[in-house]
Length: 166
Image 1 (cartoon, rainbow, N blue to C red):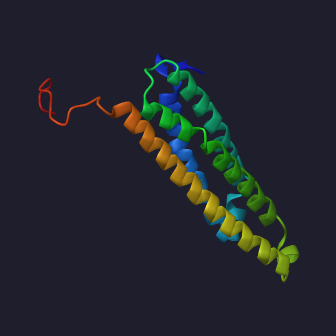
Image 2: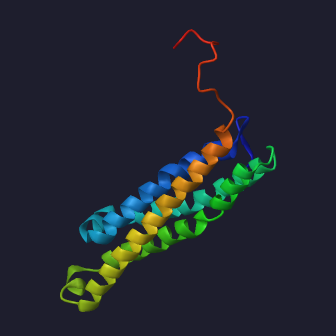
Image 3: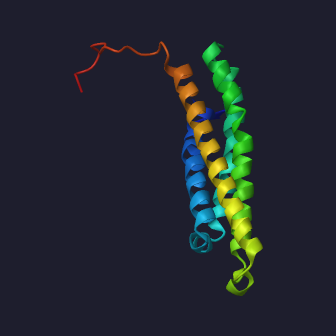
């Protein structure tokens, strides 16, 4: 995918990633530390994580197309390097979301009184917090570098006088 309605697809797809990664991270952490929320959310959690996972390489691929169609700079190269690192985080979100969903599907009788279930839940919670935080921080860093690449030197801090003041 390269263009959507005449615009570079990356410019549009990036908005999905910027929304879906933090949303998935938040949902994962809530479901990992609160099993009742995971049971209520059901299969929506791993489906959300899967959509997030799929959106990352689509956006990266569109970004690589865009990179070949703009003038190269250090800022663009930095953004590209950072962007290539998001897929493992998205994969981690998906794997943990599927694991949290799968473990909360068991019946109350299967869960009651088992020490291993508590250990697994605590481990899933800790891993979920770590992966969610890493994914969100990475999205922030990538977005910040992309904004700098797109806008550095591209605007004036003072009005240009070309409008009616609105």
